[in-house]
Length: 292
Image 1 (spheres, helix red, strand yellow):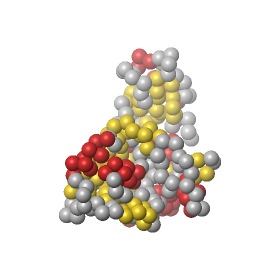
Image 2 (cartoon, one colour):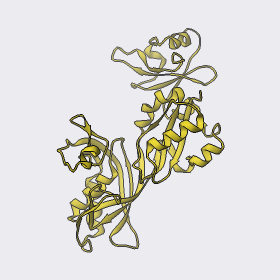
Image 3 (tube, one colour):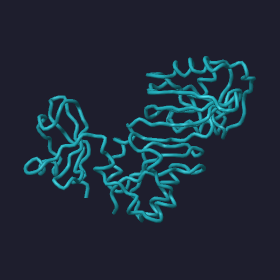
Image 4 (cartoon, helix red, strand yellow):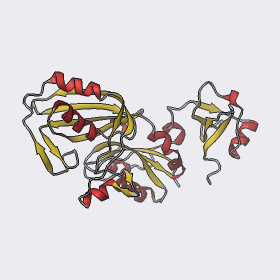
């Protein structure tokens, strides 16, 4: 079984599940998952976990994400992107750059966002997109998200603006586009969404599926490298044996903060992820050594 992470450049028209299914065939194993769903029409960075690394995906999901897209003013759709049916139109010619910048500023920082009906969010035990296909529109509770940066720039078309967004996991960029339109008084939707990075993983280092298939072993990042944004504790001796059995570690082994920390063996291989508990000790969140 191959353990590690592949940085895939998801093509348009593929679901994230389609990419996982293809990687299962390429690597000949069932234990494959992904970190951070991309809509079928979107392209860009999708992190695929293989083998024991699937247990580490939650640490990658929490990393900030960056997107580029086009904001189309004057046309609203059922899905808030160009895959949906048109439900509203208006003349956007009176919308100025200053008003758009002000709207983007108001949507930057810690905000509350209402999930779109066409999404995988559960309400009352059912996914919203299932209810949407039945023609239902149900009340959705706003959810807190963080938009770290939101920039708009003009194109040659006054109704189309380039978007560049860095945000927390769980943020719907198409909702941001529709909310900008609401702020400036016209319907709006998103098109050409591309995820350009997840944490330190950017599109320049992402592999197409064809390239992964041609050289599958070279495409895999070792777990210790894939989680390289987290600080490391290199252990040996009794501490190493404690980790192998999933036992707590003394809190003074790590610096300040709550972690998580990568716990590495003398050879640099990832053995576990540890976090600080209220009593100050370090306790395992994931132990790979015990997952045989």
